[in-house]
Every structure is written in C-alpha cells, then in structure tokens.
Length: 291
Image (cartoon, rainbow, N blue to C red):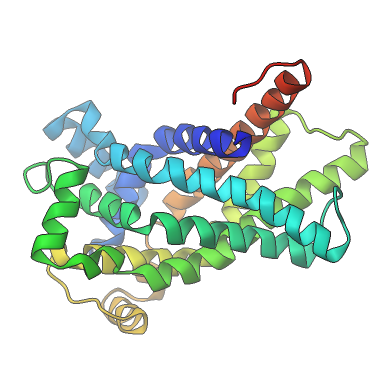
C-alpha cells in the first residue's frame, strides 16, 4: 500500500514538472519535421501564443490518469519482484546481485506497461491533436473505439513492451547500483535527496538512450490514425522512418530533449518515491497508520 501511494505521487510530481517538454517531444516524434532546440522552443512559444499558457499542459490530465497507476504499479511491483528474486537467489533483505537487479526493473516496467497501455495511447493522441478533435479523455476512448475499433487502443503495444524491458531494467538497475556503491563507499545507508536526484538523473539518461528508437516507433504507431499514415508493424515503421528521415534525424529525433527532460523526470520520481517511502516508514514506526 505504501509503495503504491508513494509511486503514484512520485509519478505525478515528475510528469507534471516536465509536461510541456514531453508534449513538444511527442509533436516532433510523430511528424517528419526536423528537430532542433530552436524549433522545439518555437513550438512551445507558438503553442503558448495561440492557446495560452495552460495549453502547454494539454494532455497532462491523460498523463496523470496514466502515470499515477503506471508509476504506482511499477514502484510497487519493483519492491515485490526484489523480494521474490531476493528469496529465490538467497539475498533476502540485502542488495540483489546484478542480473536479478536488472530483471526486477524489467519485470516491474513490463507489468506497469501492460496494465496501463490504453491510457498511454490516449495521452499520445491528445498531445498531437487540437482541442476540437478530442475534448477530454473519455471522448478519445469513445471516438477511437467507434471510428477505429477497440484494437486500435493497443496499437504500438509491442514496441512499447520491447522498449520498456531495456528501459525499466537499465533505469532501476543503474539507480539501485549507484545507491549500493554509494552505501559501500560512504557507509551511509541512505543517500541525501540531492544525491538521489543525481543517481536518478544518470539512470534516466542511460535507460532512455538505450530504448529511444522504440519510443519513436510506438508514438508513430499510436498516432497513425490522426496523422494520416499507415504504420502497422515495428519493422515497417522503422524502415519508413529511416527511408524518409534517416537514422539519427528519424529514430533518434528529439533524443536531445529527452536528455534534458528524462534525467529530470527520473531523478524527481526516484527521489520523491524514496523520500516519501522513508517518511511513511518512520511514521509507521512512530505508531501512525494510513491504512
């Protein structure tokens, strides 16, 4: 219960902070426009001038509806997988060895992605369309189901799972490894919040770089119905992107923006989770209960 609550809170805080950058990244990922920092700033500025400041957070309600259960499930299942694997490998209550550490992260990410996928699809649609097309989250679900069929809600599911396995595995693995190295070196069991932020930022940077092309493919497949293209398979989508835009400018489009927002988001979410989780543990020890 504690890790579910703390995970949901951590996900919400992190995603709200970087929402305008996230929306801008998706706009570039699904179009054939070339990405540059100047162009990204222009998109943010034009959106602000045309639709107002809050429009930069368009689709953030869908993000919250998705990210809170996603982060809650991911953090909670990560704790459970660590316990399970710890018991299996005989490391109960201690830091896991490298492979189980990687496996726990991958399993946690996969569990969360499988259980919340349609919400991610809706989020992507809301980010790239005008208000007139979809007025709210329910409207997106209803329109996609009626016009494109329920199956469309799972379009891009395979690249998502293929991307989340290395992403979640590497991210959790890096974060847990840095915490362990820090504890061994400093003999302090708990890092300071700013150290956690730095560890999370490193984890986000490495994890996102490893799985980024699959993120671009998934966004193209999710938004194919509204941008008038016919991306149906992973390899077909990749081939099309590489043919039209090249590898670096196509499959890695917007990665530099991810290098800004990814480490910030992962750093904030890991730090928020750890700090709130430790706080709840202390409250329980003092005799308070939230159940």
